[in-house]
Length: 549
Image (cartoon, rainbow, N blue to C red; front, side, top):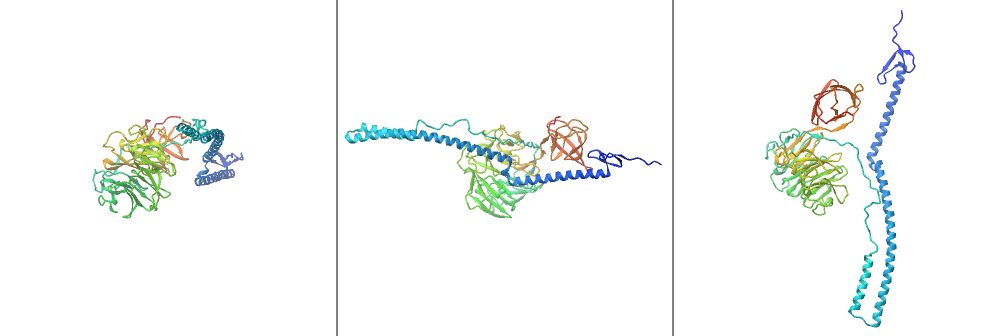
């Protein structure tokens, strides 16, 4: 009786054997060759793992030595070459000046010798009057003028540079985050008042990692903490009436949390001081200062604005028995690059660059660490409501991509500016409906990207929920050789493909996607189901326009 033949050709040894399929390469292998094939794949994985580990080590080393980035090395080389060119040119000009000066000295020597002969002649003959003396005096004045201001040599500044300027161009895609335009009141929805569920013209706000909101409840002269989703707040500083006692506040304007010791630091505006509260214990850190803005840098520095002295100062935290170091302004009131005009809120980035809401100049200024002058990064075109203007900007936030968010107080809107651009864009508000937003001051984000604003004249804190993380990727999503489409990625998940049901790979994992109700205008919303281990996750997302590649 013949045995059933279930053997096929092995891809490696080309012999008829019992074979096993490899789904990766779609080939058939006998047991021996399959084991060897598997070992080859294991070796490749080990090679990739080693390569990954080496690259990870390189990244860690470069993080510690950011000065050694290839681009930094190019900039350093450009600096050396530029300095060398300048030094060579300067030496050439010095030699020209020295030669010309020697000629000038020779001419002056001759004129002085001639003048000396005339003086001696008058002395010998003893014949001189006012006319002769005036002549000698004028001759001497002319010779002095020739030395101090030689007419045959001067410096002319050429419009052409002797060095080639360089520019830094970033090709990193920006995020175009968008937020729902209908605000949700999260604190103080019960109109003006002093109850625990009320606020009175709140200004600065701070949100911690647990989404707790710390509010400068300015005209209630207190700091209130609203826990996440709470219906009322709790007083954590002040609340003992308006006054200057150590346990009182007087129109507090700004508040930040020192998350190292969980204390709160307050800009106690009308008391002209910065005060720290820790478990109901108070300490005046800085006095004689008219402060709105506060910022803490991770290196242990406290930055404080002074709107009367038109400056921003920095203190080492814990060391406040000194005058502090001026890091911006300090050159009187004005609109010059080295001046400020009523600086309000401030933000300090990773590199200790200070961003300042230069309120009465209707702009945001950036002062790089150690700079003597600032640059305008938002507004600066006078008071107004155009996209290149601001109106008394208040609190500012700068994200990791350098995008600058501004509470544009007089225009009842939040603006987003990218440094170097002439215009900003409206993020929320700005529609002229004062009952929606009225007098924006405080500004903050939680860790999910939701936007919080202190709506001062409406006596509340509102939240605008994020609806898009806005990365548009030319992702390779295809099915059975059909066309490849743009894909919108939101909150780390695939949210748009043109089809009802596709089996796709996302992050190298098979993902079954079911989409319904998709249209293609700039406000489209779709419900999406993600099949992961049998579970379906449904969520609504903002969809940007898409197009076929």
